Length: 449
Image 1 (tube, rainbow, N blue to C red):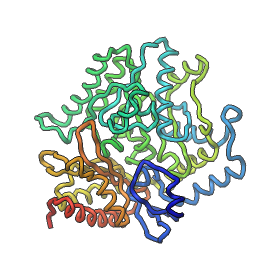
Image 2: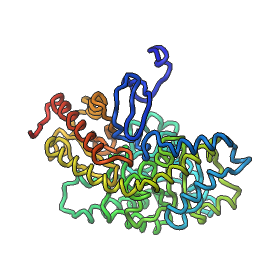
Image 3: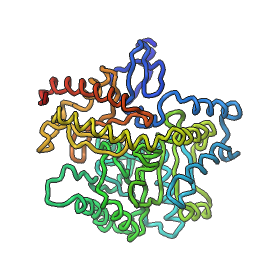
Image 4: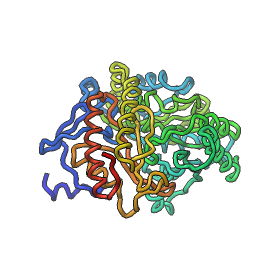
């Protein structure tokens, strides 16, 4: 592809990138033949790895039968089967499934379903969705409204209706005498305070990632956070939406991130790992208690041309089968502990890397100029972008962003496909070590040899 041809495309990154040629397992190759290890699973979505023949063949078989049938006109077998497969893996009673094309669409659909439920159950004053700062729930206007990220939301505020936010449970930055359990309750109680401030009869739902994703780099709240959140939502008649776009389908060592705790959501949002990058696919799941009144009122006032697409759903069915066949949820749990141990060892060598956290193969860390004071590098350094670039030059893909609007920091995540082996984790860690050496030289940061 010539420069002129490449220049016709525009993306959210200004970084120059090579043209990808092929991929397999945890690796990708560009047109020059250079190999990259996928330490981020793409956008933390390629859960079963690249080039899985079972999924590719399932999609081909479906395309030979029918590649598209509009859901207004027909049901299709892959969508029905995928709905059944999902319902069997989700918390009991969450057996009403709605398919879309991706995570932002799924969050948007969940918000609209919640609102229609309120209207259908004679609660028309409820419309506010409380989110967290920082957080990320998608890039469409509706999904941005409960997202806590000023960089992404500020420019669109005149076109949208920003929602109330509470602080994310960034307990690793707190300097107090509270125990972890007390800190979890403290952050959860902020939800109740916000509900009372806004007026409980105006609040429709609280949306959260059970384990943080892009905005908070695998942030894990204390165990005490979850039951208190559920209790508060129940007390005020508010729906709890779990955004499992990044955490779902085995990524954290359980099928859902929320499965690590007994905190049953009212609506679950899925995407990314549901099709593992083989086709655009997302879903929301809810109970009959929520969907039934909406259907009885005349139906869900929502729809997408490609919702429930038979090829995408065939990919989803095959992905779930591969997750089971390969034992990937158990592997995510086991390899996640290996990965965290290796990152902890790196942090002893590179003391500017701290607060290693996560579950399964959703693992993150912070980069600090002063780890004890939790002081970040200067904003103008754009350190997180430089870290990505240095890693990419060395054939390692990781996930990183600078968080603003909440406690400012640079973070990065290491989230390889769930098929990753100990040897491949070793390769990731070795390359990340080389990357951090170069990063330390460039930013004059200490290294322990």
